[in-house]
Length: 144
Length: 144
Length: 144
Length: 144
Image 1 (cartoon, rainbow over the protein chains, first blue to last red):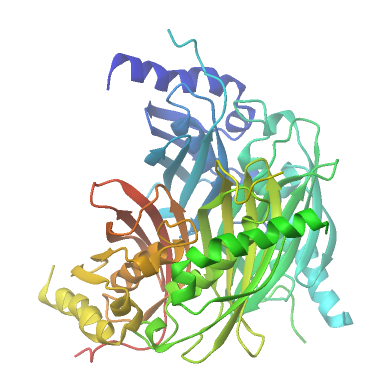
Image 2 (image 1 turned 90 degrees about the vertical axis):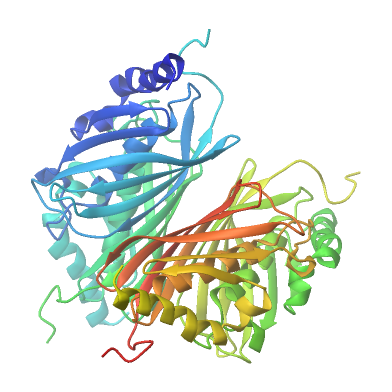
């Protein structure tokens, strides 16, 4: 990866994370960033449980969606989600440490598809998430 | 709706909500419940914003997913999400009041499809969510 | 519906169907068209069966996708599918008469969501299809 | 891969393909099969075009869906699709040779997720397809 591309990738994190109130409030940490790629973790807290004392689908989704957002914003073009699909493949519970890894599957024009896999500490897959991105106007940092 | 069916619908709310830590933490209120149906609201707070100061996709999803969970648990059979698809149709921001209405589209055997529409206070549609449910073992209340 | 809007809706059928080789080859007939709406039928033939002698998922999808295409092209703007999701809710077999009804759920800018329901002759639902459309450059008929 | 697993994989092809009228009618050839994996090709014919003279979404889907069906039936357990999502990433036209490669992403209990990528002869990606499978009762060959 060139210096330029890593600089753009890093900018996604540096520019967006300080404003990403929800990721911060949920304790989501971004551990890796590169063009088309992001990885991060979240520990399931009590306030992330649903009515059956399992991790709320919205919490699992929020983790995946966060990594998706960082991965698709690594080209210095403001990019948003147009839609997402999530499939749950196993439950998780309070105290579980979830890891989400987002990889770009394809970019074509202003659209992209990103696949995010969420695993827990034993390596088992908790959810598969496929995000559809759309580039909008604007850059993250001056492109000079 | 018979007394029995409304009793089962109400049970979803009475049994699940007190344990639904995430719905409570996000200030999600359930305003209507009936078999195959649920409606509720959430006000977008600062800690629900993403890196672009718009409502985080995970917060919008969590609201829809919550109403989905209540709507599909109204038959006194423990039911979980197997997957969901969300399409975002417009942005929302801090202070917006979001309403999610969940309607059952079809049930076949142990599976179901629920469609949730999220609107904001001006009536515009923020997101469309389609949830796929799966009934598991167990009941919410003694079925006598 | 104004004369203008019905004229645009009818144009989708008159312009596209003569070129729609696949719809014709599958015996798909379009029975109703209006802005944001289309309805049609297909009889399941032997050459539409899969390895289990049920209707091939691709045949069911093709019927839904066809009605989706007509419904989203009723505004005199060339529109294509960006993606689709289908859920199968019951099997169908050779000789079954399938009806697909496509309704517009939302349009926002150049994007739209259309929901198509496929039923068979006994009224039971065979599949639910949600199509995501995208308007591209060009009109179907001169807009004067 | 053990002899047993390859025997089961091959059985999917040997048992299902002779009855798979639609795959045969569309000229879909299965070129590779292994547990959780299948690959095949289809040449776009005139009768697979839509109203814009591009490959009909239903034809592209049918190819992906066919490879999905073979890939998920390689464990000697009758398996059907519960639903699928397809994203179109580029057009194709009459005469294009499409290749679909189906890979298993996850299996959990009776459910599975399979990802199918469709490319054309220049290697560009035409569509991404994610299939959700469900095992039903019955085996393909006597399991002794």
